[in-house]
Image (cartoon, rainbow, N blue to C red):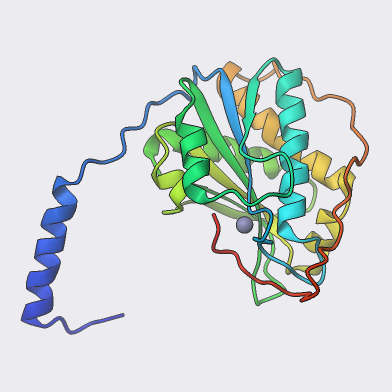
Amino acid sequence: MLRVISPVLAIGSLILLGACATTPKTAVKNTTKTFDTVVVDAGHGGKDNGAYRRYGPPEKMATLDVAQRLERKLRESQVKTVMTRSSDVFIPLNDRVSIENAQKKAIFVSIHFNDSRRRGIHGFETYYHSSASFDLANQIQGKLMTIPHSANRGVHTANFRVLRLATCPAVLVECGFLSNRAEGNQARDWEYRELLADRIANAIVDQRYGPGVYRGSAQVAAQSQPQPTSNGTGVTPTSSQR
Ligand SMILES: [Zn+2]
């Protein structure tokens, strides 16, 4: 942190602040009570593995599986869905933003798993950017906390591009730490990923229609168990693609 600010820097900062003040903010339409479509975003994919840790599957595989389960549950609740990816492909962040902003009455939900150098760190986090997204973030975090032994790392604001540039309510869910032994092992288990998808779907339907409408469906067995990637390097720790 820079504590002594030189006059030159201070003037520079003022100019920057002036520039920021005139930059139009992304206009967000608050559709949290009216949306008819959920854009489901499976984080990472293709050459971008996301977090890649000893205990869990590659993040990109776990996010895709949870996203697909979430999509199915939303459709069963008569909610339309759009997936930013349905296979192991790389989708640039700007393309994800284009997909989310192409929908008229939508919300955007991005699925990720977390990573830390400190293996003890565990728990769920949900991120948002616009104030219109706060209720949805809170709803999802609250439902994830009904999972036994879950740890609450809170609802926070973040500047992730898919959130910052969204014109609809948009949240990013961190479904536990692949770097933590217990949560990494759970992420390998399809029944646990089904549970994650169920809680997130429940939160989304509650947000739209109120409590009591969501009917959780029977569990669907593993269709695509995460497989280790075969790029040969073994470790590709990048979590920059959000
Ligand atoms: Zn991620």
